[in-house]
View 1: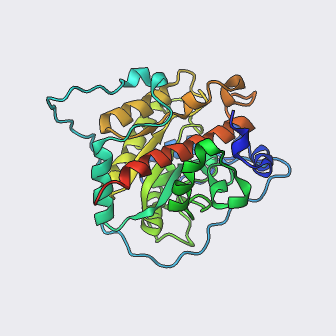
View 2: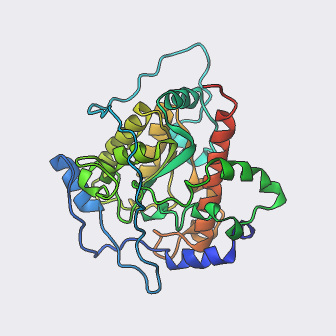
Length: 329
């Protein structure tokens, strides 16, 4: 157990923010570009009344006008894997439960990193792509507040990565919001008008404004019945868009099985395998916890689950950066 890693005050905040969606909540506006995406967001994008005592929704800070992106991809294709004489020893997607919590870093990641540096992405920035469970109040935001976290002697090496990405941990990401589904990041009207340009999606806006070198993609808790196929399609689009902009996609499994057959985690592993990308296996990280880190509703995380999520997320970021910093882009 890792309670010694976080300050008690942070755990109290986690208790207050443990929920972020209720099935009976009114739907958010549906604003994607196609009817298919419109149906997806309408089904999945459900805001949740805040628990009593919870803090107000975060407000995006004003951001100076950054350099605009010029490339907006419209066609997404799965990568073509060229056979080589080197045996592929990676674990297969079907065995995703046995994948390590912290991933190994492939040559594909190094290639994307070099592309991103050449395109002007910031090696001190990372972004989160997800729903309320990826907001900084509950996911890694504490690492931007030095007096509220604690690293024991065994894990003090993580401090260097905390310093490398200082400012990203506590930042409110344009692509991580209460009720977001996997399709939401492509909807321009889901973007914050105070920060984003007209007709700019949250994903394009986040990459333009923050210029991350890494994006942690953690979606699925706002899944809807019948949306499994579209989840895979949109996840691939997020991955393709990220790679095209020189942003390293880091895929994450989830602790819950709201869909009933763990098909979303299987999809995440399949995409990570096919694209040869890092997969942070958060599902595996919480299996030792009571009820696998979930509250009695089997959807939202317990305090121990939140604790494990932030810490193993940091360890994954550290593993990636420790590989990247040895590369001369």
